[in-house]
Image (cartoon, rainbow, N blue to C red; front, side, top):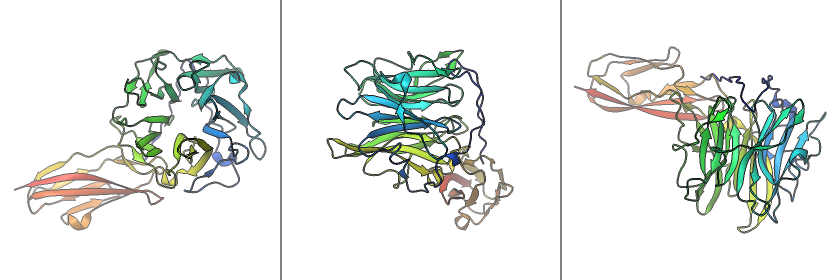
Length: 387
């Protein structure tokens, strides 16, 4: 069961109320299924040009993306508007034309763009997080988001929720690894940046996209020394904790580099960058998109506690309606391992679990949630029956 809330909060750099988003039907006459395809070939994704990272305004009428210079690894941000039938030829985003800038992300209201900017003319690796804001249809001068967001270390990507919380990657930990952090906005000031310990590992995590309602995140992780980065997803439960990140399927994650995710405002499409190398040199980098039908899966939102009872003691348990959730499916099908626990009954309509245990022992109750796309997720609950 899904209930998504998008609070409208006036914050320092997001000053306009959000308008109802338009459907992503404006993208193209044909759409990808669960197999990724190159987005807008020869317009946005051009052979021989290293595109990386794309973001759309909430009404899907404008987009920005980055282009990497393979010679000095500087970056330029390109901008395009949607025409009658297709995207206009992208041009360098004029307010940042003289900057080495990377990885643009529109804010939830489309009035600001977060991006990474080189810290010096000679070092394009070391970057900080900047923002540029539109006022009265005019882009203001870009501003660096100072500490606790930017630091003397490298901050490479940043994405913002509807209430102004910024999620970003940084290698400020001192061990050379990129980790994921967030910082909340309070009375116009950003609070201390907190590392997301439940998501971060001994590997690099970066390229983070946070959903506007903060219900899920997609990011890239370098899973092994001999394996380039793949995309992972993590959901936020009722206790505000993040679920264990899961790797996206093998049609998305390949032997190439998958990074820079972005999800359309209606949660129907995932965009990401696929980078090809020969081990030493950059060969090609394009922006792909794919249906989220196999990206979003049921997840445990409101977990159950283990159960202890006596032989002959009647069990009556109301299962929370929000036990499982799914980002793109409000009606999930729940079932249990009925054959292994014959004394248990589960009424999926009333969400009630009942039974009369007739023997002592330790049992494992497995709930399975399935969505309309046949994605399934299990959750195990231990039942201890005492004599």
